[in-house]
Length: 410
Image (tube, rainbow, N blue to C red; front, side, top):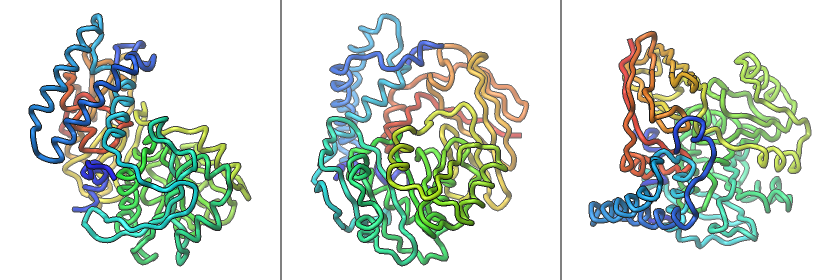
């Protein structure tokens, strides 16, 4: 179990209420030894924050390591290396992971949701699962109404190749099925996600949400509320129809062509997202191929978001404030990296907060942010501590931001 339970719960908190220019896209720059050394100090700082003891001393030691590394960068800014920091934060997570999960068979356990209430779940971990050799993709599964999670894993997810490919985690829904597509259903699914982040060395860029039968409504409601957390949505069995308004950057796979699947696919087509695949009678082989070919788009250049819950205010790299879900707020955001410009079209929203990094725009140059025609221009300052604290707060090492700015919407 992670000693930083706060990180695992951060994604649920709301529900409970690189180099500049083209060089930034080249990938990792630091040596692995440097990444791991920084990671140890980051982990010590996070541990101090969790224990509320020696926080500043831990950060001072981390800062000393960062300055020594920066001194060898030959003019490159350490905080700009987004993909290096993603790897650093993964290694930091491993430093805090006390992995005692059993491998190779379906296990059932009880955990706690962010309110401290008991939460049942079942899981299967690949026999060769070794966290330190790299993060694993995970299928977060919601079985159909009335189906026990352990029996569901044993009966519908027994394919050896699939079981060797990903961690399988089936959440036990406590909410009546009539509420699965609402806030209570999303809370149950996200409670399972919270347990996942505390228990396994998961690949945050390959978390797939799966719904079988009526469980698809709960899965779809969750990815619509928090589209930035998942790499894809999978529907199995005769799925129930569901909403899709926030899935511009999140693909879906339906392994059936029943009425619910056809209605959902039509909705995706009407929204012109073009990212829903129907594999009639699709089985484990189709699912394995699909998840191996997909990763989350953590920093999309075009995103749209219409909050479905008052508590789900953010998506990808933006967050909305002073808004009411009942009024139908929405936002459409586009990045033109060539001109270093972000254009925002927002309705029924008072404030938009934008998180920046050097994969979204070039932070070594002035950035133009146009909000409903109002132009804001400046250089958002990179801040290492802000970046490290944001990952601690959100519990997601796959989304790294070095600066944040808020803009009034008029």
